[in-house]
Structures are given as C-alpha cells and as structure tokens.
Length: 188
Image (cartoon, rainbow, N blue to C red; front, side, top):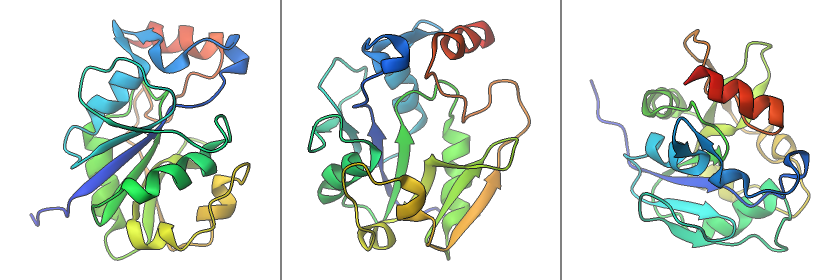
C-alpha cells in the first residue's frame, strides 16, 4: 500500500448555533467528549490542525484563526484558514461531526489522489462539502468570500464522491438541532 501524502486539517467551529439557542456548540459533549475534540481525534494524523472560530479549550494543540467577519460562514472560515495550510492536501471538516473517524479521512485522502478532492456523500447521495479532502492548490484557486456557499466554491472542481460504510453513526451526522444532539448521544 502506498503511503498517503501529508495533509492539514481545517475544522470550522465558528457558527452561531442559532438552532441550538446560541450555545457553544463545539463544546457540547457527546459520549463524554466535546464535539470539537471528537473531530480533532479523527484528524490525529494531520500535520497541522487549524480550527476556525473562537478559542476554547481542546484536548490537543491546534492553530487558531478567525473568519472575517466573525460568523461569516464556512467560506469565510476557509478563507481565514488557507494561509495557514502548508501540506499539499487539506481536510475541510465541520466542527460538529461526532462520528467522523480517522478511517473516513484515510478513505477520503486515498480517493482524492489524482483529483482535486473527495467528499463523502450521505444516504440520499448529497455531497457533504464539510467532510472532504482537497488539494491545497485546487482550493486556493476558488474564490472564498463571506456568505458564499461551499457548493458554489467546490462544486466545479474534479470531485470524487465516496460512500461511507453503512453504520448507524454515520460520519456526516452533524448536531445542528437539539434532536440531532440527542440522536448522537443515543448512538454512543
């Protein structure tokens, strides 16, 4: 098996969590560990872990940055993080994915080789833009602006779609609502 090239991880954790009443969503626990720490654990093989959002305690060292304007959305978060990315590949992840695993990242990294990137698709076949691995050069060609959609930024690239193994704790399960959070807690 060929060794995968190095990658950095960008974790977006700067949202307002309005559907959860404005709480610090990345700090919410699932299975005794903060959502953000669960995501950071999945990218333990990254050269650098860059977190976009307000600084908070984490279990592992990270590099912090802030999108402009604060709360400007995922595209603004990527724009803030890109100058800090050094590795040839970068994982773009939401900070509220309690079930993403290092194996999911390895599959994405392998799938992206020879392409601009790879994303996981959910059960309905929808691309999960904040669960992917990208060539640093490819995403630097995109126009990242506050309020821009991830699909608009990344959709024109050469993207490989991967399906995750069939499991109840799907890696794309995010925690946007109280119901999502309760479902996640019930799966650990």
